[in-house]
Image (cartoon, rainbow, N blue to C red; front, side, top):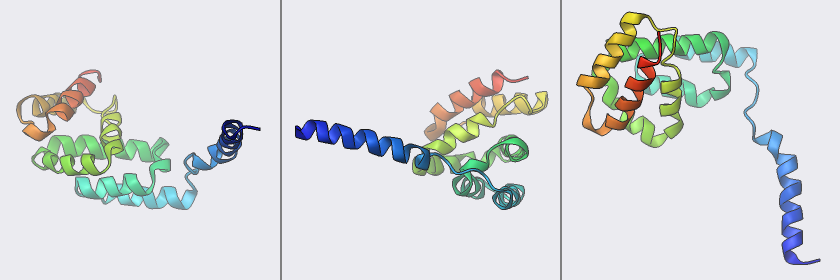
Amino acid sequence: MSIRRVVCAAVAVLSTISGPALALAACGKNDAEYAQHLVDHANDWTSLEAAFHRYPECDDSALAEGYDDKIATMLVDRWNEVSDLNSLFMRNPMFETFVLKHVDSLMSPSQTKKIVAHASMECPAKLSDFCEKLKAQAQRQN
């Protein structure tokens, strides 16, 4: 048997065995409760990213709605801190996707309007790509 066939067979076996192990673990009740606590008490983008980073598997149902509310509120009421996102996105590119995902139809029309205005007129230069995505995502809502 050639080396190539041995390697291909090994890769096939390993991917079959490790595939499920690479998936995110289910969010247990204790994890969900602690993740909710972290989201409820997140007072800046860094603490919100820490909650996302620690419990990515818990981003569903009630906790997802908590993220929706927290992200919309921070984008509306704490826009002056949006520049903090640049370093967080560089460190964890999935956090940008996460933030945009939570700009959704649960926002009020006034939140949508304010987010679009902020992203259009008050965007830090280093976040221009994010602001364009944010504006487009917000405009798709409501």
